[in-house]
Length: 265
Image (cartoon, rainbow, N blue to C red; front, side, top):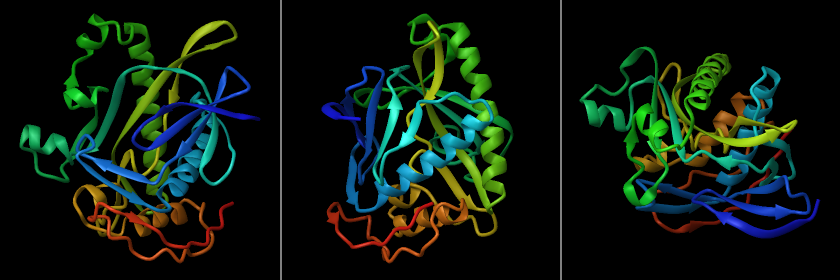
């Protein structure tokens, strides 16, 4: 497949055209951002890990009937994905209170929720990705009521699967965000799972120690982001050889260059 011109560049990925109008190449960058791009850094190896972890999770979700945009992983940093029309909403599902919800509602960090909580944010950096209600989504035609109902069912199914997957390797799934897009399948419009699922988009805590194994290590200046992401990959059975990437000081807004040796299945 021939790689064409750059179509879009986001905070963590770049999308390139291909010689197939229905497929694009998704490149995972090493950039790390937080607080609507107010905090930035470049952490070598992050894109490689996110690419492989996301491929692993999306492939497993396909096996339980969750349609998504992944076609295949091309190399260490790139995937071939289906071209979709992204719904401009971040769909968030929470199992444990952490992050913004604790500040908004004055809830203690780590509070286990009685049942999964679904929230919606409008994807707009200039507005700070404001939280919105289902009525906003339907009123402003960001998604139809039928599409929203389908997305919610998919979210709960994905959450149920991922809780079990991570629990099996000693990790608690605190919360995560998803994106969905529209695509024609056999001539019919469908909504499928898009974007990535990785430690960039999930909160993951060690089941015993509550050690953070996700992007909160960058947000909160805890350091050791690459070792944390590597630990997630190892527990999922993706990474089979210890990387020689040492701890990265992610509090500095600078590029970090280190040699690494990766072996993925």
